Length: 132
Image (cartoon, rainbow, N blue to C red; front, side, top):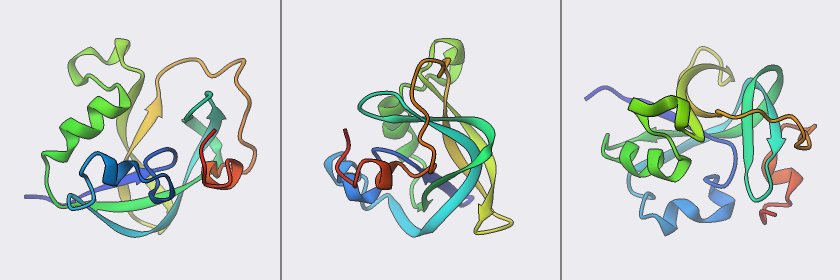
């Protein structure tokens, strides 16, 4: 099995407890904080990142089981064979930190116009780790 890495930048970050709530704590191993290029928006009760030149802060995890994708895709509203209808789409990105690492990220698949930007790119800091 090849090793897969995942970046969480919103409600799946450890401070929110959703990984435990979905029973994913044994399927994901936290490695470090991380950063990637993008723009982060406040979509209400969760954020959405879109490709861009700013920095988005997140958490990097190693997946210990490929079966976790089913749970994550469902949570993120990602339907691989119906991407146009998906709320988020899963793509690999090059991380800025740690450098030279590829990881999967869920990009927001809608138009973020009209939603406030998260200028710091850090959802946990923006919400004081409590969500909205």
